[in-house]
Structures are given as C-alpha cells and as structure tokens.
Amino acid sequence: MQKASFFRIAMRTGAWMVLAFLLLPMLVVVPVSLTDHSYISLPGQGLSLAHYVNYFTNPRWLEATWQSVVIGVAVSALATLLGTAFAVGCWFLSDFWATVARWVLITPLLVPPVVQALGFYRFWVQLGLIDTLGGVILAHTLLALPYVTISVFAALANLDRRIPQAARSLGASVWTTVISVVVPAARPGMLAGALFAFIVSFDEIVAVLFLTVRNVQTLPKMIWQGIQDNIDPTIAAVATVLTLLTASIMVVVSLRRRN
Image 1: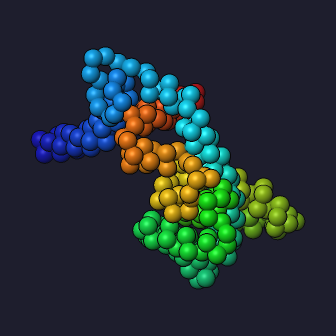
Image 2: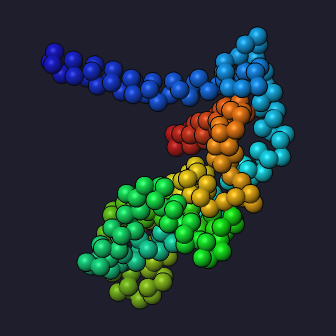
Image 3: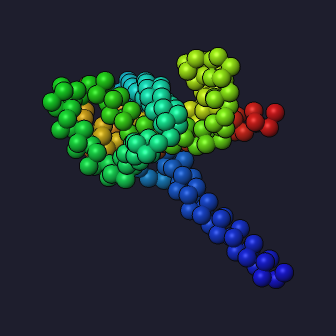
C-alpha cells in the first residue's frame, strides 16, 4: 500500500511539474503584453494597453490575422474533404496497396519542415504559385492531410464492416452507403481532423517564409518579422489574445459536453 501511495504521489507531482513547465511561460506573456515600454520587457512604471490598441487598430496586423483565418478555413475544408475521401476509399479497399497508400500519405509527418518548404518552393516556382494565396492554401492543405486521414482512420476503426455490407444487400447504392453509413461513423474524426488542419495552417510559418514575399502576410509571419526587426511588444499582445480565445473555446466546449 505504501509503494502504491508513493507511486501515485510521484505521478501526480510529475504531472503538475509538466503542466507548470507548459503553462508558466504562457503566464509571463501576459505582463509583457501590458508593458509601458516600446520593446519586449516587463512593465516599468505602470501597465499599458497601447500594444493591444496597436494590434486592433493597425491595418497590417488585422489584415495578417484575417488572411490567416481565411487560409485556415480554406485549408480545413479542403483537407477534410480530400482526407476523408482518401480514408474512406482505403477503408473500403482494405488491401495491401491501401495500407501502402496510408503509410505514404503519413510519411510527410516525418520530413523536417525546412525540407518540405524547400520542396514546395522548387515546385511552386515552376507552377507560378509563389507569393499567392492559392499557393499557400495548397501547401498548407498538403501539410494538414496526414492529420485528417489519421483522425478519420481512427474513427472508422470502430465501424463494423458488416453494416455497410448489410446496407448494400438491402439495395443501397455505394454512394448512399457512404453518405448514410460510413460518413456518420467518420464524422467525429472529420471534425477532429478539420480542427487539426486549421491549427496546422494557422500556426505554419516555415512554408510561408519560403512561399511568400509581400502579397501574402499571415499572422505567424508578422510575429516572425516583429521578432526579427524590432521585437515589437505587440507580439505579446497577439499571443495573449490567441491564448484567451483558445481557453474560452475550450471552456465553452467543455460546458456544452457537460450539458
């Protein structure tokens, strides 16, 4: 009993230490965003909301945020559509080549982001997609596809194969079986994959740096430039806003699940 109690205490202590390691740096960002200096630092003589005002009134920051949201939504929709179609097709086939295709689609997760971005750059130059919104959306879609397929595969793992077979034996077409039987079973994975795709796109910086110049300005790129040029404290204000927004969404989702 003493060993079991010691083990539980050690596990809880370790869990709290990991949680503190992840959250404490985020808490430092909040006072930095309220600094009264023009550079990243803790508040000096008092608190200031000037950097929040700069974020919400500066057209460059607002345009970058809007472009990131538009790209993220487009990538989420495209990646979910393509990834779900791929996962459903492989699920129906369930043969050697379907397994190979699954592993091939997942392999981009093992490739370093710089290598991926360099490959995109070389290919996008030939297609004339450099510094275009469509080029960024296409690149982000390819980066997000593995996350969608993994989520949908996980959801379809719980679907009994005899259910689609029963639907087919009762006269349902392949399309009707997919829409009425397979897609509802895959819906949790589709929703999770869409969320992952949006996050991957919204947070992506390496590919954007390789593929854009001036026409496309995403929020991560603006943050990167703020760090490189003058260490603008507006970066901390942006980080705080995004953290609060994410925490609010998590609280709302948690409350809705309880109800």
